[in-house]
Amino acid sequence: MATSPPYPTHPGIPAGGTLRHAHWWHRRWVRYGALITLLTLSGLVILALVREQTGTEGFLVGLGLAILPVPLLIAVFRWLDRVEPGPWRNLVFAFSWGACAAALVAIIANSFATRWIATATADPTSADTWGATVIAPVVEESAKAAAILLLFLFRRRDFTGIVDGVVIAGVTATGFAFTENILYLGTAFGTDQLAGHSGIASVTAATFFVRVIMSPFAHPLFTVLTGIGFGIAALAGERQRLRRVLLPPAGLLLAMGMHAFWNGSATFGDYGFFAVYGGFMVPAFGLLTWLVIWTRQRELRTVREELPAYVVAGWLSPAEPFALGSMRARRLAREYAGHHLGRPAGRTVAQYEAYATSLAFLRRRGRLGRARADFVVREGELLQELWNRRDIARPALEYAARATAPPVPVLLPPVHGWAPVHGPATPYPAYNPYRT
Image (cartoon, rainbow, N blue to C red):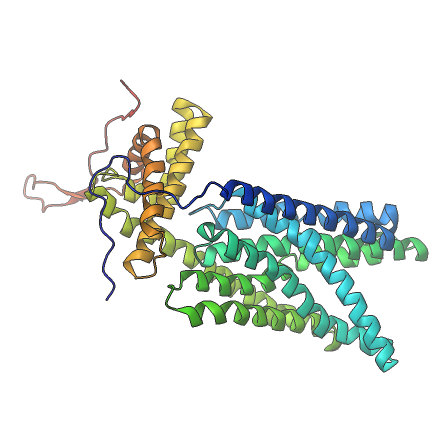
């Protein structure tokens, strides 16, 4: 049985060094520069390719229509990430990779493979079918999975569980679908221009309805399976090597399979698409949504269960674990601090909440014997971040805990022969933690 990590003994400046070395800063900016250059070049090439296939007018129409579902999808994934929000730069990278690098790989590889099959079989129709149901799922899901792998390897501290995998995978797939929709919608618009179609009966309207209205979640749904595989691997201990190695490829294979089944629905007859959509895609979407929300609630429960250890040691006040384990209390604390001390104070409370959540997850991994070698150093860093923000965050969280605490029933004495009854607790008096 794994022993619990030692409690901090004094809420002062934590002991321990840092894993950073003098040359780390230079290596980091070299990596950033290489990634930015790669994504910029990919973006320019994909822009030229899509514009060449759709024309300038078709590109602009496709861009305007394809961007419509993007804010909603990003907001959904950001909402899922609210318990332990990851850095925005990770999401920007994931979206950029999906929209630029992954889309470029997919367009080149899919086109090359389809042409090769058509030449080898002398059957263009069969080549298109094979390209859609076999080549495209393998190429596209592998290209999107590369972003998840990079963040899993190089941003490991921000990748701690299933929700992180789902969010990164979903945002990457959203970027990929965005570029793909520009291509499809722009091509459809060009077809309508040549045929003189317009209005509801146009190819553009049909494409928009299928790709943007009915199935904006299709690509995120596929790639989320890969993200779940990486997320479960992130929860594994260092001794569970087989689990960490096998689960990401297993998730990727499931993503490819679901993608292939979806693409192949067009070959199942006149109503094949709607049968697959209603009988498979919608239930799968509902199941994965339930899984992610359940995981989110379990994360909040972890916060409530693990942080009391730091109350005993004096790092946190007794009310903080309850407040930090409730999304409503967290929001109230941010609003309270922002209202009384300004927007910077609200951001400080948000940072405090994020660091406290990371601390709870870190401690849980340590208690279960899954901590990495830098457990003590990382714990010290997180505690120091909390200690630096406690003067602003602690009063706001204590207020939020009081405001959201459930009413406590009290037993009233019998009056004139009536039996005892339960009544609401006396409400807390007006409380202003910032009053001097």
